[in-house]
Amino acid sequence: MSAGVVYGIDLGTTYSCVARVNRSGEPEVVPLSDGAATLPSVVLFVGPDDYVTGEPARRLARARADDVCALVKRRMGDGDWRFVSSGRAWSAPAVSSLILRALVGDVAFAAGESVRDVVITVPAYFGDEERRATVLAGQYAGLTVVDVINEPTAAALSYGFARFNADASGASDAGRSGREGHEEAALVYDLGGGTFDVTVVELADRRVSVVAVDGDHQLGGADWDEKIVLYLSRQFLDAHPGAEDPLDDSEAAQALLLAAEQAKRELSDRTRTTVRVEHDGHALTVPFSRDDLERLTAGLLERTVTLARSVLAAARARGVARLDRVLLVGGSSRMPAVARRLAAELGVPVELRDPDLAVAKGAALYGEKKAIERLVLADLVSRGQILDGAQPDTAAPEDLAAACRRLADAFGLTAERVRRTVEVQVVNVVSRGFGVLALDRFGERSAVFLVHRNDRLPIAVRRSFGTVRDDQDVVTVHVVEQGGGAESTRVDDVKIIAQADITGIPPGFPAGTPIEITFRMGFDGILEVTALHEGLADRPLTVRVETSAALSQADVARERDAVARLRRREG
Ligand code: AMP
Image (cartoon, rainbow, N blue to C red; front, top):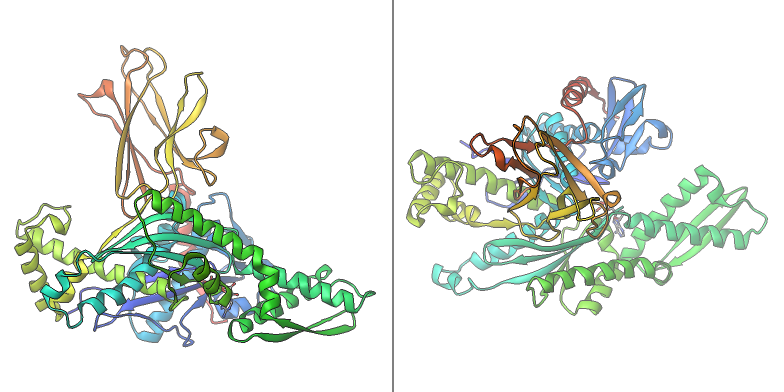
């Protein structure tokens, strides 16, 4: 008998990866059919009915540039974007679902496990639409998305897991309770290929809380590569003044980019290397050192440090007085300059552990928590010890302990493991402000924010607005999301993510009749908005505003069928 594995999936911009918790309770990455831990998040459409994913797709990226879709994660939440190939158009969730399908297909093939329930990770800065698009991608792939979890939270969980375990091993209950008050704050610095995400998390005894988030979606390893490419082309032209600039030729530019990226990786392990540049009948071997790299890219690194300072200031404003450590995530954080600069800036230990796999492992740990919690809840509800829909911590401690013991017996786990898994709590914050459009005192439409960035989740906020005229029979609710880095009330600066009407309001209500708007956001960051016309209190008319989203219901059904009909080819 099994507790029903909930797999953790890191659906990354450049790479994706699946992890699960093994029988001994440890998170591990499931190797794919080619033995690799990660799958390049690249899809090649081969004709209207077939596709190829991963390394073979990436290898063909240049030969079949028009049919290869990479970096699709950047398009999540952009409802108008489509990738067109062989006369068919695919939305970002549809393309992402092919990556998910490839991953779970590989797990079935390589490990003989069939994947159904998953937790998928998303960047902390993802808004509501991107989160919904991620869930949709999972559904298109035939998966049940139990939850989405923020990447830095997952990384912190995977770090926290090791720490909680170290705390628990050999410690008696009394010994452990002596450490109950132990809390630490960590800065999760996640520098990937194309994005930078920086987050302050608090790790308490059994709680991982995101305190503040910041980042730059247009900053990542690719910018480092770009600086190297410019340097190499300058060196080449200095040596061969009459030659054509390799950057003016797409093939030569692509070759230079690959060489630059390779050199950058090498310089994480040694201090000097050489790069061969060949173009226009000329060749040059350019010596390139770690010092050169660091000098060329110091400005980029400083941008990340500035954002790290700003997220720390936000965390301080929320009561985090002290930082204990930095956790490095993302392939680009392997560059030695990153750890060195952060240690100098912040004066705390900087840890680089599993930078590519920590996020998937954390998602698997969270998935296990979800699986076990579901069973414990069902047990408590079936005995009438808590109400359906309640959280386990609302049960009497002895009932909870007994439920954990029963579950442990049934599934051959230790009672301690079940209890600890149920007790771990993940507390998130809102990544962007959300609100509605309303008329300001000058009669202009402007945004009013009910939920603000870094508010703690889950959240429920209610606010009253008034109708604008007597006998108003329709009220349109526009739900908006903060557009840029800061909240702005200007209509042009916000993104309308949903729109719905309260209709059929009977006559007889004066202008200014209250409309009560409630925003609820769960731990998954998915927003639910309810609007209630006060005048209809005896016949409450509650409108649930679903995000207009990216795709209509009809589109979703059509795309799901189309995706299901596609066949995957092996390279
Ligand atoms: P990710 O999106 O986390 O997979 O990050 C991929 C990015 O990490 C790419 O920009 C890679 O060039 C970069 N990267 C991977 N390994 C290294 C390394 N050893 N040194 C420097 N950058 C690396």
